[in-house]
Image (cartoon, rainbow over all chains, first blue to last red; front, side):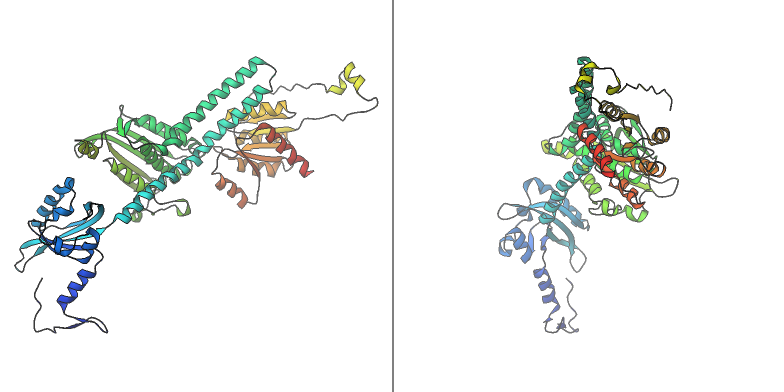
Length: 380
Length: 158
């Protein structure tokens, strides 16, 4: 901290009844902060500890000052500290890094930390100041949001595929009625055989699409081509009524290790968005092929529509929760959840769009590794 | 539409010589000739259209089907059906559009729409904006209930 110029007024008016020395003011600010403010030296030893830090981590200042910061870090994350110190020594900040720490009671707490280098009067880095915000509340909300989006997605799909199920059911109802009231055994058998086929159609759609939300978390080997075909079949009604044609290109057999239900949710979200964006006679293009991203092998799925497109000013917010361009019809969490799910699998998602008439459309490119690299690391 | 319509008309029971029935019948009473009401069934799901037509034909109707709105309008112009039963969600011309066109050209026709889709409200709303309200029944519907509904619609308007 820079020393105050002694010739300037030593007491500053900070309000009607408050007069604090600037140094006292800064101390008061640190102590009244809601976020933990901790400073440490370059060996990782704690040199200051504010009230919020005590509240969040459970240790008093006396207990923590002089101790290693590693006391707060779960063992498997100790390598983070080396990474952080090296950045600090290089004069870099670490901003809004979301991670987990441990309290005195041994409980885990999710935090967002920002770390800045502390310099002495000569500009040399002598330590780091760390701000830790307790985000466990927010994280819990996010998890609930993803869960509720899963149900909303199920509801959306259910409404769309109701048509695919209700039509064959109507036919089956008619066929059984005809069989029952028929005087000819041969004709009756014929009606019943047709009814069986229609029921199989219903069963297939129901199994493949509606049941996904119940799935357990374990990843299984999924054939992407079949998955895409199943999801597209579920949207047949809407596709037909809007006369949207589909152009699917599957290069090579591409099995990936993912949670099947989540993949259905992702594809359903994206395809539903594309259908909404197109009016009559649009084209929905789906391409799947092997790809490599950041030296990881996997699959790239590309879904492109020639609908209205997304305006430039919205592109930056399109993956944010509760952002929608669909007025009352949009929940605003479809793409956000999609991104969360893909990134959870170790993949990434990129959206490009154009609103120029004649060339308008949106294209989503998703990369999914063959096996989740994070999961592989944890298994080792 | 290509094809040929074959109409087979059966002589009604009271005009056919039937000694047993004649003995049962009171002498001197006459039953009025019953004509079958005509119904045009329109659905792009052929299985639904065909099975519905078959059931209606066995249940005292004279039923004909079409798989799209354009064809339906052509048939209706000649057939002048008493009933129109149409699916809402169809490509190119949806059920509401078809129904509105029918109302304009054949105002006497009783119209019932049916649909397997929950989200047809936009289409129905479109019709309402133009001042048209139609009866809709949800699929799947038991054929006997469908027939009861159709008959009830006709008798309530008389």
